[in-house]
Image (cartoon, rainbow over all chains, first blue to last red; front, side, top):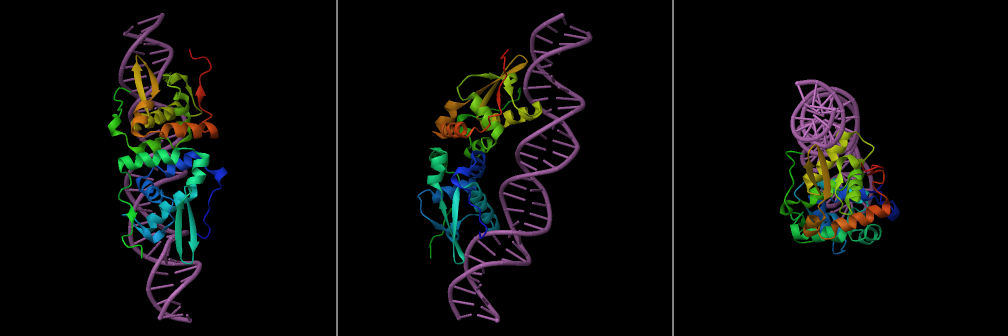
Length: 115
Length: 115
DNA sequence: TAGCTTGTTCGATGTTCGACGAACAACGAA
DNA sequence: TTCGTTGTTCGTCGAACATCGAACAAGCTA
């Protein structure tokens, strides 16, 4: 987090992004972020240990799919939609369309009461 | 080959297809097949051992990205563009556009003399 | 039948991945 | 300062992956 590496737009790697988006859990996370809203780490609910969730968020961040912002002791995550669209036009849109139709990552949701 | 399993269109899995398309070598193969032309196995040139190439073609086939046809002792490969577009509209197009722009898999090419 | 070509399969090896719990670091609050 | 919250990192595990060379199977061809 502190040393969070966010690749620049020019550094995005297509294979890395594809790999990041090939896991159902991570696709679910991307679907949650698809509306552009910034979400708090704690809002994210997935049926895995928090260390595992942290791992997946790191994979997405390292691939340049998401951006993590730290504020005090908590983190906020956003989808780098614009950067991705710039480098890989239509890719995220196609993925989201297919994922929605298939229900991929449907077991990832937001906390009932965001606090 | 003989026991080649080709998933039906309805059986295509988005995460599996994404995973199949997350390797530069496999992306390169898909780029070669992108024009819809059926290619002979022997036409494909990649800087890996033939057992490795066989493995990658199998991954693509198992994910439903390509179709392999056997004719006598040799194989012919095609991209299942239509099936993929039906299930995951725009995905392959976006991938190909990005891969072309980035030059991903550019070390995969066709044999100089196709015969 | 014997040999050649073509591509798959079989180990073997080293790497990466996904998962977990435990320990840790950073920060805000008491 | 002490405590609780929040999320990362570490160590570990088994499974999956990429790669190779060698062995193999299937089909032509001589």
